[in-house]
Image (cartoon, rainbow, N blue to C red):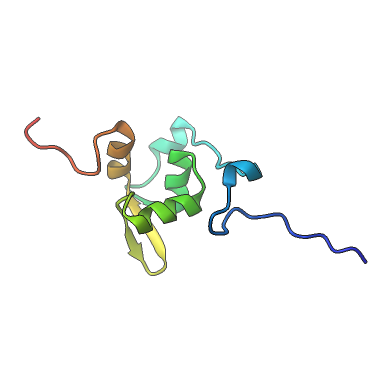
Length: 95
């Protein structure tokens, strides 16, 4: 009997997601508009077009501001929008 090794999932530490052909599906404008204010790592991954494991790494490293509820990360949609727009995680007052 021949054993076939499972294909890498991309969740392993240091895994190269792009090389494995794993893609996070893009959000449509309609899907984006109905997202709640508090997002999961999967939803943030779709916004940023990265794997959700990368979102969790960035959150653990403090690159993405978020909070943990139990073992899962949650993120503010408005903060993610500001990060994507290049404004940083906090609003600048007086500008």
